[in-house]
Image (cartoon, rainbow, N blue to C red; front, side):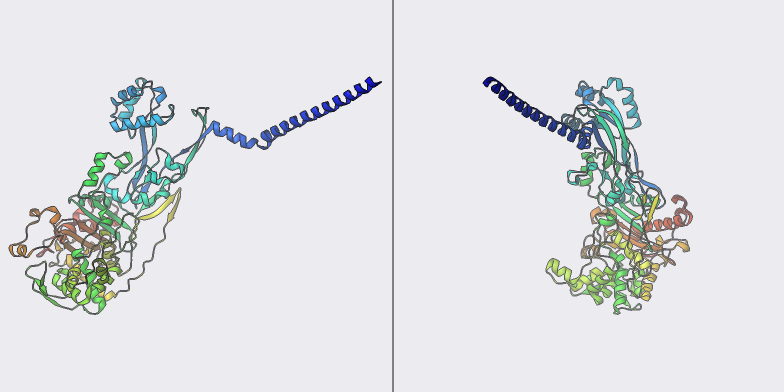
Length: 636
């Protein structure tokens, strides 16, 4: 009986333990099933993405950069095929031997070889490394023929920026180059080996609009990251096309003319709209070299050249404007009410102030001059007297109204402001009060007065258009796909100056080139329907001693280049209905009427004829460029 009770107790205990064990197993299996359900059903999308991330490599495709066109649609900056040779290290067998064999076909510089070895050392062996870019078709053909003897060597095709007009547009367009470490902002597009960003000119100013949006390529890879096949491709959005106000044919003509001198700049702009047709600066450089990879020797040459080819002299060159500043001084005198159009001054060839003597450019003097004749003959003594009477602050106020001493706002980087001095400025800068003699020097655009060529062109345009504050601009439209964003025409505010006083200045400027006694009569335009008005200037870069004045000045070819006068000329045309304004500055170019005026004349003729006839420029200005002799030419 007792044994039966013990067996029953053991049976119940076993049953309970079995139930507990079964319950535990059920709980464990339930947890496993729940976890599996969570992983395979609830989290399935997440783990599928993770698996795909390991299997699929998403790569960015650089978008085509937007083109840059001139006002008539001619291409200034385009994209062209870039043939490059690459090498896959794991397929070469011996990398040095393969490079040696390849260098027999295309030259490989020592620094390129060092770069290739560095890239191979830090990359996976199956990834291609660029050996050389921008191959010619002959080089591509030679490599292709020798491919069996060049294991691991392949020809790849990409895209590269190209400027058909090269150095003629270098300062305006700028150039593109690989991003530096300072440019990297986390945007993976910037880290692509083929990607380029704008470094200067409009390429830099409108870089974001020109870049476009990257495309993507989905590549299936194995566990080691080796590409197996492309699964999908999404092309990017090309960058916007940029249409400039520039006229590339006029730009090329300006560069041809300026290239006859060592250092010079020219600007042509529309007096009514502010559109810049020409913005030229010499010497210049080839922007294509920066895209290809400029050599250290070329870069050093550009940096050390005393003619400063990297500087855009049209917007960053600062020069004493000389006699081209006299129209502003004339307006300041007339607007002050202290000077009238018939105000006369006798010019004996010099003017004394205290112990100092201030000379006129014409040694024998001009005799009695009124305002119009003072401008026409560029009489220094006349403007000494005007500046002495009205003072520097009135001159500065008028100069500021005509846009000098401040940025014009043209859409280019690196613009400089020039300098229009005042009494307060000089005392703050030097601690020395303004002197009366400095009024006289400023009255002929010398001394502290500095201006850029684009400021001079804008000043001339404001005179020509009747006194409206036109400002220069380089861009016309942004083109996105098939849609064109036309920028609205800007209405420029009036300067608030008397039309009668402005007419006096214009009459004087008209006489400069159209009156036989004008200082630039030799450079006049013979066709009366295209006739121009202008003002020549010759600014000194060194002081002329009394001994030199007594014994005669040396000829230009007897003076070192750096000591020669700067030659300047401003002009607008046609006189009866002004449309175009021009400024030309030739560093150390001698007389403004002799050297700068003919260039301005040819550019204004070409601009008018191009607008009228749309014919090749070579056929336009040649027939009307001839001019007769003049009895006087401006020397200072």
